[in-house]
Length: 385
Image (cartoon, rainbow, N blue to C red; front, side):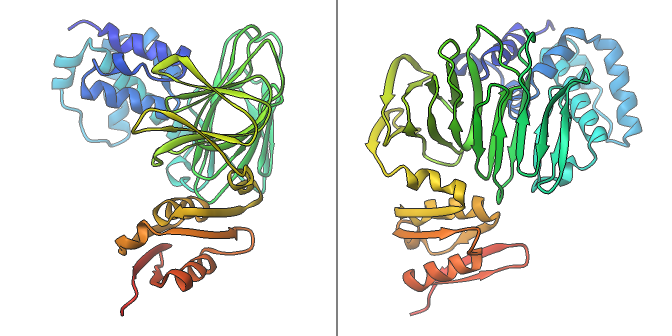
């Protein structure tokens, strides 16, 4: 079986563009799709390509077997070698195995750090950022890329670098974090968010980052180098401005709220159709209708999360649940289906009110029972008549 050129082509396209070519992606097998999704989500596309380019299949098969024995892993079915020996899927699987093994060995805390801020470096290693600590971010070559102090990470400006190298930062539920990119752009990341960004921006190229979750951007002005936020299928393009982007996987829309300046929105599927935003407006792309709708809004409702404030204005309770889960790092299980569609007006501050205070306030108005379990799960039930 020959190496599948479509897999490697898509990996290279993802590496250069930063998102998936949906049409080409559909041509792959489910196994190949799952593999590429995993590599993309973990920021390991470039690492996998480097591995594929340098791999010796027979040699690395023996290395894989030896590594598995050392790790006391379950034996791998030899049929894999016979059927997938020269397939790109198998090559990438070996690559992914070694990447994950090395990352785990270098970073023994990785498996236990779901509630800690993680920085994924260019080689796939994971660095834990302690909120009350400080550290230097160092490249493979020993260059100091940036410095972290508490809840802020600042990357240094560096000249002469002609290769785009990405880092990825992951913010768990219950936490927020501030990031300054090498061009001076400030990014405020909300709970449950991931941002993939270049360590340095290259002269003559666009400044592109990739967001899943929510972030507020204060973009450093540079007329020659537009700044683009890729969020799901939406691209937000600016030169220098202040705006909020929300693109959580579980939400029904991707929204951009403009505070200052101007931005243009476009859908990957319709690159020539652009929607312009002016300050005070929200542009929301619906995942179901595939349309961008404009709405004049109170921008503070969408940006006060940076101050710890949660403001709900005619928001359905099922949407409120998602925000509370991310903000307080809890799991809410609602057994009152009617309550899901009830719209609520309320405001809280996570720095002042804990989740128990929030649930008390809402339940006193909407009439439901709840209990908080030892594992921080909140169970909501109807109040008996």
